[in-house]
Image (cartoon, rainbow, N blue to C red):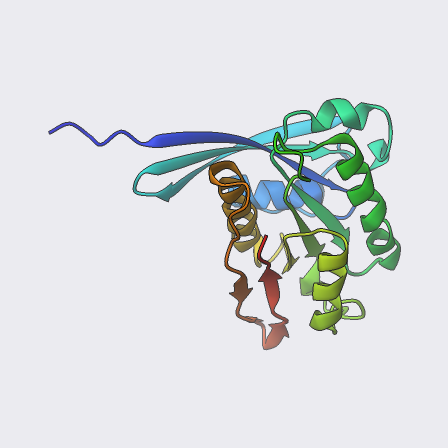
Length: 212
């Protein structure tokens, strides 16, 4: 019996944000299922591949580009961003300055990259290192929702590469928006509301994937 042919998609995803926010750790956890606290700072750009069996008919291949924090807003980012279909912008919840830089990263991305239909590429905000228990920025989910809508993010997630929290969920949110934007530029995506993750008796607050 002949195997049903699957549709394949290849998407380039950017992982950007300030130096030391955990971009490489997130990619290593997502692609290789491991974590080390001792990664060297990425120089320039690195990338990794992840294959998702999206559904019975669809295979999604993700090329994740890990762009060094020290490259921020430089001329080279235009080259690195080329042909990307989505982005994660990462900050470290323990370092408020990295959150303040998020809007600059988003503006840089939007100024250099648009989809073929002229819209901004879907971007998901990752509030990383949530396992460290410093909750200053994250204690108001409504405020985070508002921030993301005002700045054009399709969703946000508290993540931890160390504890493997919400990384797969964040990726599914982003890929879902990319597929929707490809198949129908005006189609909206139903929001994903991620239930709290219970870890070591600590509740990680809800995160959201918004409608397009």
